Every structure is written in C-alpha cells, then in structure tokens.
Image 1 (cartoon, helix red, strand yellow):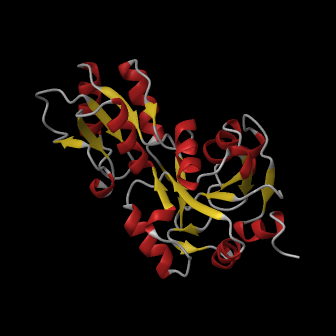
Image 2 (cartoon, rainbow, N blue to C red):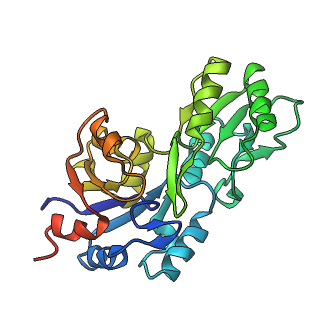
Amino acid sequence: MDSVRAVLIDIDGVLTVSWQPLPGAVEALREIRDAGLAVALVTNTTSRTRASIAGTLADAGFPVATEDILTAPAVTAAHLAERLPGARCALLNHGDIEEDLTGVTVVDFADPDPVPDVVIVGGAGPEFGYEALNRAFGHLQRGARLVAMHRNLYWRTDEGLQLDSGAFLTGLEAAARTEAEVTGKPSRAFFEAALAHLGAGAEEAVMVGDDIESDVLAAQRAGITGVLVRTGKYLPETHEAASGRPDHVLDSFADLPALLGLTQ
C-alpha cells in the first residue's frame, strides 16, 4: 500500500448511517488527511446536493468541503452535457438536486408532449409510485433514452435496509426492452471521473465501500484497489455470493489508517 496517494470513499454505510458518523470514522478521515493523501467522497446519494452533503458531514466533525464530494447527479450532468447537449430530461428522483444538474434541461415529468429526450432515474422514494413509473414506461416506449444515476437495490438507514431505485430500474428496462446508461457507481466512467478530479492514477488509489459489487469490485475492474467494510449494507451472504473477491476486507472505516500504514 506504499504507492497509495488517493483514497476514494463511499459515504453512506462507510462514514455514516442516516448521516450519523460511524464509530471512529471522523478520526480515521482526519488521520488520512493529516498524512497528505488526496481524498474524494464518492456517493450515489441523489437526495442531497454536494454542498448540503459537505455541510452535514462538516457539522458532524468530518474534515470535508464541497469540492471533496463527487455525486452521481454531478457526474450525470457532465455525462449529459458531453453526450446529449440540450436534451430535454424528465427526472424521477427523491430529493432536490437541481443545483448539481448544471446545464441539464429538466422538463415536467407529467407532461407527455413532446416526449422528453431522456428519462433520468435517480434515488427512490415516495415519488416511485405506479403512476410515475408507468409514465416513465410510456416515455421510453415513445423513444426516450433511459439514464440511471445508479442501480443500487437497497441502502441501510437507522431503520434497516430500504429499497432503492435499482429494483424499479430493472423492471423498466425489461418492460421497455431497453438498457439504462448508468452514470454513477458501478460505471467505470464514475471512477475515472473521481481519479481525474484527484489527479491520480488507478494504481495509486484505493476505493472503500460497503457495497461489494457497486463500490469495491467495480473499482477493482477499473484498476483501483478495493476495500470492503463490514458496515452499512454489508451482508455476509452478499459477500459470499459476489461476482469476485475484494482486495481487502475491514471491519470498519476506522481500520483503514492501519491498512494504509499510517498507524503504528
């Protein structure tokens, strides 16, 4: 691990659960910062803006600022600006993220005419009822492209595991006979954007996450060293049934400084 100079860190389930710090996480991040390692907090969270996330974490004691946060909505905006500039986008998402969708033209999801160019699926919430999903299905049948900020099936809160939009996305893809362009984790482009943000190569970085597939194995496929933590959404059965094996497994993020050789 001597060559590591950049650390990519998932937030929910790794640093916090329901935005409350996990034991030792604040201290561990401070130690990593003090060692001079570059840090990016990479998250599929779609319910808050980067500034809101940074403010909440800073209030909890984490040494972070807005520029340290890379979210799926921000990467989605960049993806659309590059691939589909000027596209009219219908957004199905829980939370207000328009501040991070710079340059994206968001149209009324309920308006059937004209058909939007893109249906964007963000994070799940009460908005994901039959009427909204059926409307998305109608847009897709009439030619709209499907872009998903992520395809997570669930996440952990202080009330336990909660269903996420990946469960609905799979149904939309099957019904509309299409395949979503995924812009957040586990897409390779998301990890490449994070590395470019830090000015680091894949061989110089580690990715720490609680989702073995979307966080860890996806990062490893991009050439990044993967570190799985047994917090958040971690389940032994998903670990055993995963498509590969993580490079490292830790009980929690608090153990990362020792793995990096920062703690004697």
